[in-house]
Length: 168
Image 1 (cartoon, rainbow, N blue to C red):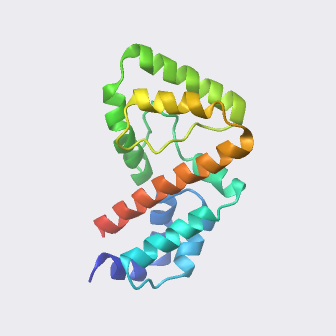
Image 2 (tube, rainbow, N blue to C red):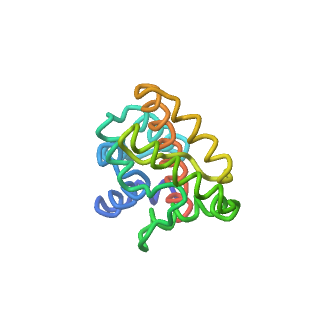
């Protein structure tokens, strides 16, 4: 049985937990679950991508609630905490103390301006790159930043869904 066949056959409770670990927005997971069975991995990922693009702002905020600040280590032994640590690991290793301090300040400024955690698809990025992106995004207005945040959340969710499939 391939990963998509296993995914299609997962009990509802397990599927819900796996999908919430990818993106803590119940509407996203419900949309994906409701469309089972999927004929292929590509079809599943396309449905997940489409569902992420349709999230309401309330759903995005729910998804953000499960993400630690960039530069902070996610606590716990949940899959999403482990993924978060993995996604930020390269960036955490690459930063000097001045960059770390600047990123803490950028996080504070961002949260003060937008009212939620700064979220970025951190996989493969250095802290210097993340800091530059944070500073650039601080120049965005609210509407522009919502589009960017939603897209970053979508990218993270799809990466994590790939990891779920790879583990099945």
